Amino acid sequence: MTPADTGRPRASAPAARGTMIGVLLLVLSMWTLSCLDASGKWVMNAGVPLLVLSWFRYAIHLVLVLALVLPTRGVRVLHSNKPREQLIRGGSMFLATLMFFTTLSYIPQAEATSINFLAPLLVLSLAPWILKEPARLSRFVAAGIAFIGVIIVIRPGGGLHPVGTIFGLLTACCFAAQFIATRRVAGDDPFTSLIWSGAVGTACLTLTLPFILPPALPVLQGLSTLDWLLLISTGITGGLGHLFQIAAYRRAPASTLAPFIYLQIISATSVGWLVWGHFPDPLTWLGIAIICASGIGIGLIEWRRGKAQAAVPARAAAR
Image (cartoon, rainbow, N blue to C red; front, side):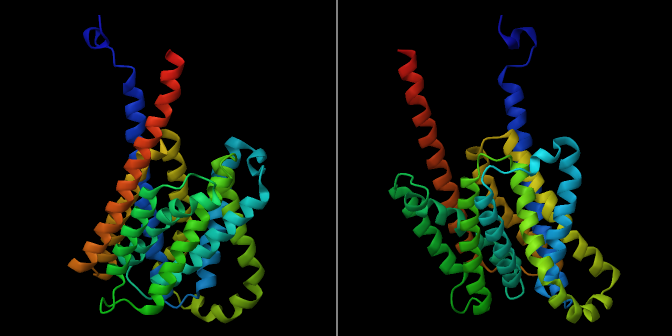
């Protein structure tokens, strides 16, 4: 009798459910992080300085993650096997945050998010030199195609502020550095990396509080209740967004989740349209589609390549 004959679920059913839950958690994280971006853009428009906004984002992130993780993992989760790499990762994430919030103060959320999608392709292109991985023509082709898409998005006459465009490209470079650093701390618990990234940003910004807080006090005192709620929410959505990502990658393989990362353009566009009434024009959508297609395409190629490499030892062992 087969499992279907007896009415019992097939052995692959739990794995399939886990993968589906992983995908849903990743999509939830994309929406959560898009809300973080929108909240940051909103409070900056209300006059909150960049560094003050970033302090709230990182300090609340750190407190939230510690409150959720320490009771179950204990203080051992604070220990890192590669503290130097964790500092580099936290620093690159901190710089990416500053760059991206600056980008959002100049250009719409959908366009800013689409430029960020250049980051994972930059990592694949730099992998032979930085991560000592084999050079692959498909990766360079995918990065080149994605860059064409970025050029279409930031094209002259497209209405994007040149300063915002420059900071958007710098953000992609910072995110690429963060992704590379994340690969180097793969041996650490993901929650350890999440805590360290929050701690690095909080520590750096707390040192600047005596200088940045006094000039910002009049602005903070004049904020409405909604502005304060959105300011505080940046730390909550930032922490929860990354917690959802960790949960997603614990339930589904990275190769399976990779194409779904590009769904963030939907959440970013939706939030930007609902809050500010901005919707990209057709030519910008063409550039976004090229970037996403390039990333999804190389993701599928890498997945098939990894599957084929894993099958070789299996066949050899079966002989």
